[in-house]
Image (cartoon, rainbow, N blue to C red; front, top):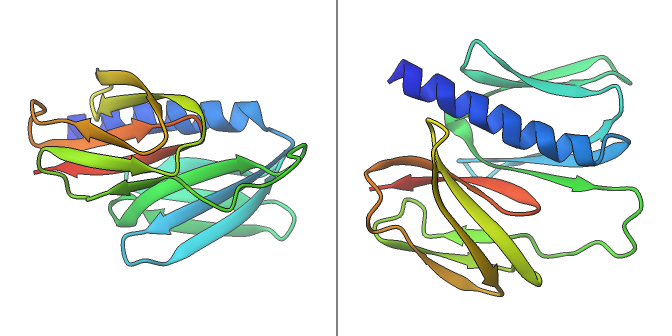
Length: 161
């Protein structure tokens, strides 16, 4: 199980790292917790995040020497948005429900045509599809486990029961 979890962290690091590569100047990162709370950070070029001991996400903000740690098991979703150069910010965020999932889940608030990728925690691409608008996604053939759903603007963790 630890090996599977470590592979998932590597995949999450690659996915989240690629998001920050796109907007290194100024990125807003919001961490959505399982208890319903949210933590938002305006990430500048020198700020960083990383995984510590394969158990925690660490966010370091250089401007105020602030360092926050979050247990990975407590995180529901992480969203990153570029804050510079956007003409109009979207007030809607992508919603995935229900979670945990049995056979299907609904993706809501997608704008335009988007490519969606679903990865297992060991890094295997389980499904890729092109979607528009609200879409019902079928994962009935997936084994029980935790999966990452990557959209163009965010990555979500889902649990398949």
